Image (cartoon, rainbow, N blue to C red; front, side, top):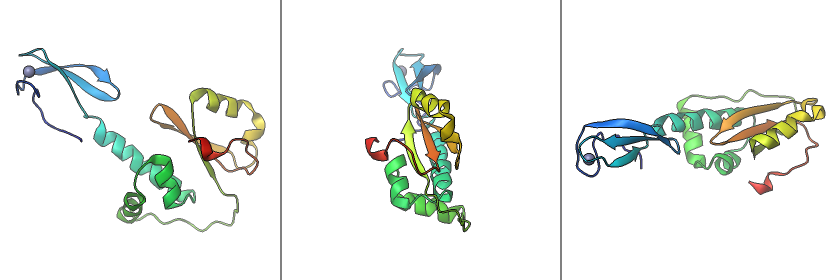
Amino acid sequence: MMTDNKNCPKCHSTEFVKSGIIKERQRFKCKSCNYYFTVQKLGKRIEGEYVIKALQLYLEGISFREIERILNVSHVSVMNWVKTYNIKRPKTTANVQPEVQILKHKEVLALLGDESNLDDGGLLVTPMDSKYLVLTWKKRFGKKNTEL
Ligand SMILES: [Zn+2]
């Protein structure tokens, strides 16, 4: 649950100071009882990033179900975002189906290290939590999405 509660969960004091970020959550230290607590303060931002990523994938021709699987957000949400932001997918004559993978940094480097991977349709890399979401347009690509 996202919370915007601006008080210590233990003593309900509103006097606290920032004390680092843990797992993308802002940590606070209560000034009156010294209790440490975290608030999903970055939640909204992350949510916004997911909307953008979902819409990017949608534009690239990825299906709602596939987006749901990749981003772990309901396909109904994605459909709603498409409607809300009035996103229209332009018709394309290219019949290369993009592939989506979630890769670790090392795997991204390996992918980029092989120049042939950049040849055909190229690829797109965007950060995704602690990993990277990689879209490729080429047909011959080694790894399958099954290991997600
Ligand atoms: Zn407190």
